[in-house]
Image 1: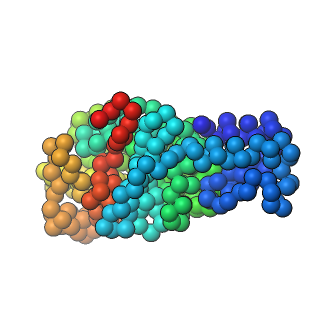
Image 2 (image 1 turned 60 degrees about the horizontal axis):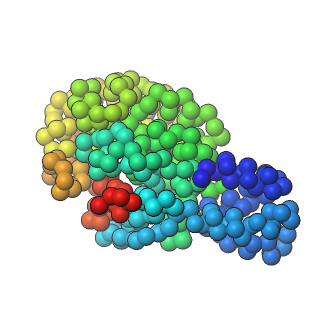
Length: 335
Ligand code: SF4
């Protein structure tokens, strides 16, 4: 379900925009709405009040928590069921962050990502995206939402932007705390700041070499690393938040001295932060994770050469909740 469809249904029942906003605000903030008995709800039109219990149940039934897998670092992977039997994964991150999924599977096919091995199964609707936030809030507060779970947000742009708008207007989440993560697509840079909520941008770059990027991210749009950094930085300067350049470190692949030189060439003077995350090993994939010492030495070198670099482990690796480890587990017709 799309949020816009839900709004239309409420409007058809006689709801004014303020009524619709109140219902959606209570939902996304995981606050109770008692079906029309409290003083406030009495201001809703009679037809909306009559339908409210069913509509409310429908919103809460969009996703179901099938299982929760707590990790040692305080994060937790949620396996989330959708109404057609498909599943996505949502990760509760430390410090009140949440990583949501925007697609079941993904068409980009990054060679180091389990989600990419499945291809695209289906889009996740805007209401299903927001429902992941409402579900997470039953466990803990959510103050930041990153679109870094299953799927490429640029390939489901209308739903993702609709979810971002709701989260940034009624969801009690600061615009800078909404992070749109993409491998890069020209359309993204056109629409990202077109609406009332302008999210922060994370660019999944992973290499400065166009040829290597084409083989690591086989179905990403063919923009060169130079073009991607230029478009991203332009957006970052327009919004006032630095672009977060994402880099999954693959041992012996993109952690070479040539890549370090390439990063310095590409990012010097740019309004950007480089986030390096050593690859999260999964048995099905051939890549190796560089040692922490090697990764730390690379981050140190980049710092010394003037690049603002953060090195971190992704949350929830021990429960396969880390970057690249998410997948459509137990989905219909799949092992
Ligand atoms: Fe898709 Fe992101 Fe995985 Fe690449 S890393 S295949 S874009 S989910």
